[in-house]
Amino acid sequence: MRKIPLLFLIVALVSLWVDDIRADQFMGGFSYQYTTSAKTIPQGAWMLRSHSRATSISIGSSSITNVTLASSLNYGALKNLELELTSILYQDVNNPVGSIAGSSNKPDGGYFRWKYGNIPLFNLITFGILGSLRSSMGDYADVYLEPYYSEAYAAEIDYLFSYFHDKNYPDQALQIHYNLGYINYNDSEDIFSSTDAIKANLALSYPLPFRKVYFDFILESHGLFFRQYRDGYKSSYSIEDYAYLTSSLVWKITPSWRLMGGIDFLVYQGEEMTNPSSLPRAYRDTNYPSYRVSYKLSWLPFIKQRPKRRIRLVEEESVTVMEPMPGEKLGIGQQYDWKGFLQNEFDYVQENLRKIREERKKLEEQQKEEAKKKTG
Image (cartoon, rainbow, N blue to C red):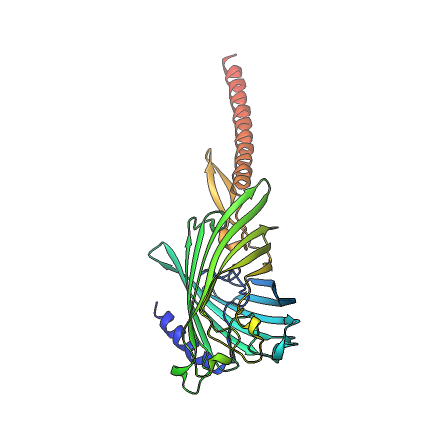
């Protein structure tokens, strides 16, 4: 447990030297739309994800669309450590007004994330820590209809708590995940006078088997709540508190491929705090869209591991049978086929028992013939 404070200190210090962190931007690894699990991907495994998020709003006769595309690559560096690179490839607010006209970033920015997880707490909850570092590559930092972020150095750290109703087969039972994070945007000369915020995410996942097609239903809530603001913050587009409720469905296409689609519904927006002079009055009251649609396509290549062999005595004969590896080492969402394993082992044992019975029957017949010859 001594590693946790040390890791927190290292990230908190290093983060101050990396440019621009933005909340809730396309998490990779074992995550949902906005909430991430405290578990890491298996050591030595890679996960590739593509992301998209889009929305459309109407103000008077104008229609504004906001589209973002991203991709992420995760690597299981150690048993408890996962590394992630995420690139926001495209960020575009189409047909806006005022000075935000043409605010298109290609690319928008890149993230480096690490997750230190798989830490058991009281044999009930899995704990983890997530750190994020962002490098801004776009021409625009403060984007209309998107959560606030600055061009200054910033730091973010999240604490992850996960509950798995079935630890051996977490993908086949209820899961609950809670993330609590802190962001300091460092957008003032004094870091203690900078804008900072608290981030809170909660997700519930429940499997919905339908014949031979498997789905997960996900319900999430996520929000950003500002603790204090820098001087001059009223020139920003979106710096109010907000909370969204997200409903998603995950299609488990194969053990390695997953497709997630969801809809965000705005359930809370804080009191209007900003008044950018570049925006017409009608646009100033709309800081966050009332809904957003998003999707994630993930691929975790199957991790091939040779099953262990063990020797079992059956009817005084040594029989070699296969022993499955733990389910969590087989890849994302892949569980060991216990039914097939037991059936194969049963057939194998039955076949050996049949051979043993035949040999014993032959031996008994030979003994009877020899006895007849002696008595004859």
